[in-house]
Length: 377
Image (tube, rainbow, N blue to C red; front, top):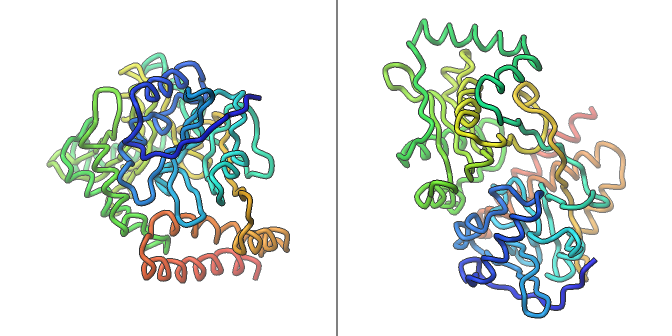
């Protein structure tokens, strides 16, 4: 294990050219770092987020590791949380920059939900399954793999598509939407979904939507936000998805659809079309994020693990100690603690104004109690 001799905290947009080159070199030589969330361009796009910072770990003046993060008091979160699905230290595995080390060096409480560990599991953290699909070999090879794994699912999807075509004509798929209005449509539908499901509205704070628009506006041929859509033959928008894209991995990020078209499975149809297009264009992977719920099991398969947990720096605080007490209690209390901590992670990340934080916290506590404590009744 290497021993870093120094740590420098800078703004992400203050990254020096030589450090940027070191970052790129690390990603080129460490296979576990080849993901668009770990690209320096993602950190640069997120540089205006409240509390944005970049830890540069150095030895002998040379950069050996990078960790983009944001501070909320003593709380340390990955930069772009709660939007950033995967995160971690951009460093060689031998540097030993695990979550405990990062929390200690930064002097705070580090909370992560999708830590990509380059070497091994993170002790005490929850293991979350990463779901993805290998799309190498082109459309035909992809279709053969999908049909072999979930024949009945795709037979039903073909039936739903025929029903859509009878009512609305041939669906119109657009791989590369550049109109910001389509992204606004996605955000509006996600906000409606959050209200219906009583989840915290991650776009109410403003900076989260700004980040997506920045990634769309600054997109290059090999990095940025890709927006794809599905329309009726008459041009009505029925489904759209915003994904983080680096030309090798398409990370599906914010899928949504018009509920009026739900009976036709338009959301899943759009995802299938995106996967086929990525396969034809020579992508390596379509990443669905962590968790094997819902439609993911038909379209993707387990592809490694990421880790969720919290680690305290030098001075444990009251909230951390209270969480540890709940985590050691009966099953209903453990469910409550996990649900509440996840909801508070989102609120802490999004809300930088006290009034908005308190409103979100009250709603989160009530929702977590209904979901977790009520489940034992």
